Length: 117
Image 1 (tube, rainbow, N blue to C red):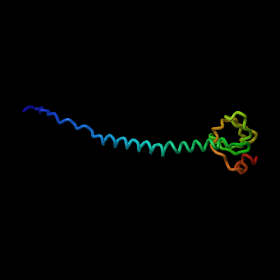
Image 2 (image 1 turned 90 degrees about the vertical axis):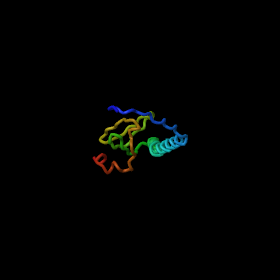
Image 3 (image 1 turned 180 degrees about the horizontal axis):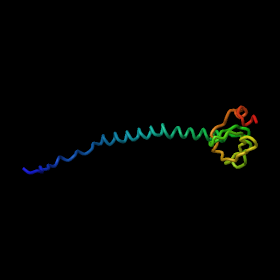
Image 4 (image 1 turned 135 degrees about the vertical axis):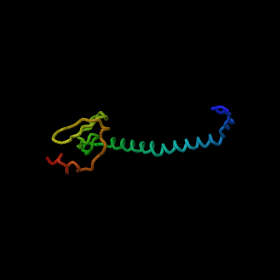
């Protein structure tokens, strides 16, 4: 007998059963349904709510922008893409409508230093 032992072939692996393939399809389907309910559906709801908020904007609404500016809408031009926001001391910013992230309750700016000066 030598240093290297003889190698013997093992029996061929059995073919996968059809039931194993079917269970894999079920697992993938359950995963896809979970992704829909936990990721896609909440994002869709949030997007619809934000679009409803932006469509309901009017002159005089107090808003908070994506950059952290708080101000009052002074004008809604015919162009639906932009809005003019008065941030205080006569400073009016023209910004894209979708940069508005929240509509503040009426009177919020009165209680801050923006309107008190």
